[in-house]
Image 1 (tube, rainbow, N blue to C red):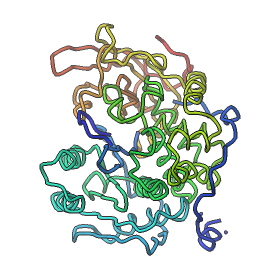
Image 2 (image 1 turned 45 degrees about the vertical axis):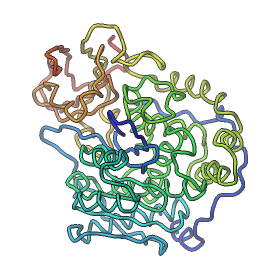
Image 3 (image 1 turned 180 degrees about the vertical axis):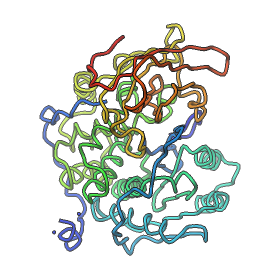
Image 4 (image 1 turned 120 degrees about the horizontal axis):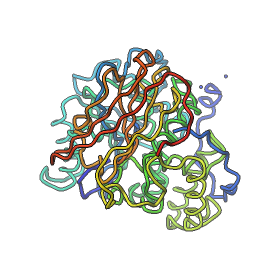
Length: 460
């Protein structure tokens, strides 16, 4: 998830451990997406940002939390998954034994659930300068190169928390990494390991194997699937709801998400959230069967097919036929909060600058998997920002808002969308959310806080 940068980029367990995970078979057509199951309608964050000619990466957007923060200590106790012998781990002295165990278990879980990626080096350092310098040596590039600058800026601005390219994964074990719950760390490593599988099967850089929504959506599908499969804190129902929530502030059609730069002006989490939902639409069968179908896509490319031909071989339709089907499904089942799919992004909209209260939802309807303040019984309230893209504020987004007294936390739901979580014991009554931009423009919106079950009807 690169802002303003031009270079983008579980008996059953025992049985699987015994037989291993074989590589995907020759590509075959998948069932028609028209038969895809309907996802529960509910309203981010883990992601991977792929730079062209630079490593792919798991990204996160920092959230400003007033009193509560993610509690890694409350995560389930980790039973380690053995890392494959084909993976080499490099650490500096600052990486503790517990942190090493989680990193290696995430890779081991990825290998168990997803398949084999071949030889991989995982470099995890607490010292960022040493991590970046080693990356430069690995890629044989000067520290002044555009790719090196991208790598450094994305990590230092906390946009990336891990990065991968063929045969190597980079992890900065900083305070942000340490604050993650164990399930989210496992997901991050399994996500990155699936990128290694993609590149291993396709015999090329992942950025050259199709649109970013597909390879990032697939990696998130695999990474979260691994965590749910291993019963490590999240169920698939929770993950689906989380992804739907994260998608409903985004207006761009899937067809526009070819490279990360295409959605820079709206929301760079787009390929990880809506891309995940597109993968679920394409792959009705969950688990290893679904992953086998996905891997067919990259394996076909390893045999010489273009990504467009590989898409048709794997999913039984052309990508041009797929796009309108998915957008109709998306608009019907989980339409954006702040406009219609394909509407102009907030930044380009001629509408006057302002903040609108859109709706109150039931506790749990805007679940953020790594944020405890989004859990029930806290109540989510959704707001839309008109005439301005919040994405342009970067990590200063939270500082631009004046949040209502007593709120539990907030999360971004898109470039023009924000969710505020109120505690049920906060007094019922009128509250206000205000936004002040760096240029001095100011807008606010009032809302009525109620502890009752709200009607799921917009108040636009």
